[in-house]
Length: 206
Image 1 (tube, helix red, strand yellow):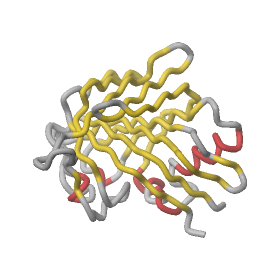
Image 2 (image 1 turned 90 degrees about the vertical axis):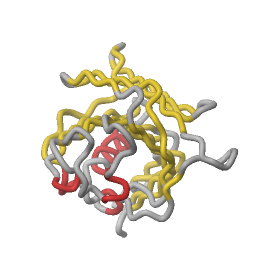
Image 3 (image 1 turned 180 degrees about the vertical axis):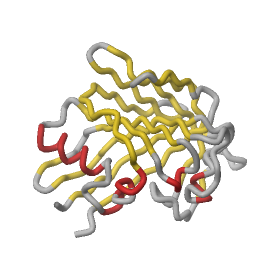
Image 4 (image 1 turned 180 degrees about the horizontal axis):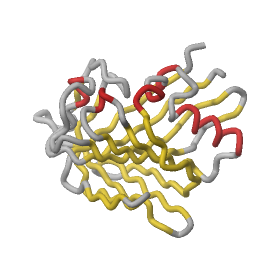
């Protein structure tokens, strides 16, 4: 099935400084030996087959026991409650790697899926960066705000360019100003820890 996604991604994790996975491509050990993170995806333009994915969001809880490149990932997906059944199924396949393409590598890395749920997701731009609020059945799943880091040149962010990172080649360095997650027995607070932002363009192999 042909698919494509163009949009924005924020990531907030438990690493002390900047996520070492970006430049090491998952070979470096995270700051504390394991990775706890929350990912937010805002799809500006997208499709799965004939079904539009425009203006939908996805939240991802990620728990990795060691180096990201060694696999063993445990994940949970929260899919925008505005998605119809076809879009929901398509997004589930895309973000578990089953749909192949740019995210096909996920099928090799994910060992456990805690669940896939519908959720109300609000992903917005802020003065300093980006904010994503995820709720389900009146429960707050995540409340994550990440702020860009200003560079030495006024008006320019700190950005890693031209990497081979699977998410995107250009990654904006950020910090979790408020970043809390409560889901599937995990109670995480990444405030003050590593974060990142990227514009993404992912697509199927077809």
